[in-house]
Image 1 (tube, rainbow, N blue to C red):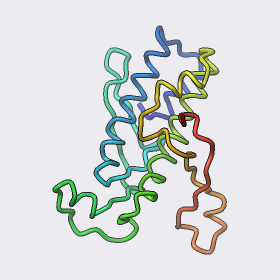
Image 2 (image 1 turned 180 degrees about the vertical axis):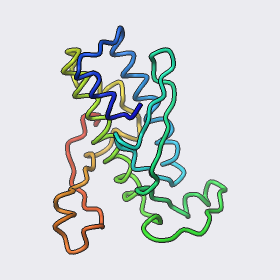
Image 3 (image 1 turned 90 degrees about the vertical axis):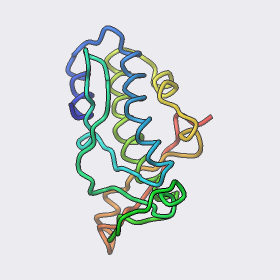
Length: 173
């Protein structure tokens, strides 16, 4: 199920017997593999349309990712982890850890996960702060969160280059 559809189902009134448990499992299924890859130098632009959640017995079980158009790869980080990268071209390549972090967090956390927090909070009356606490990981606690400034990108001289803004991080602490 696309991650964006999950938020839509919650907003449409689909009731879960344990919404906090479901959300906690969802955050784990989403963030664990994405942060694992990020630590190794691969940032997926995992947003609600290209990120699929596999449910088993009604619970988040694993993550599938489609559309590698927004991926960013650090050859230097891969080499530090014993992986020789294949030839890479275009805008896939960056050894800038801030660019990798922004690419991943803007899509997966500021976008897709934030939408889940909003949907679960509205549907079940769970405070966003509690939901964000369940999603928090040590790597996510520092600094503001990046968001893609899409309108600014499209109006820029080079509309294909990412432009970032930041928002307060609800997991900071």
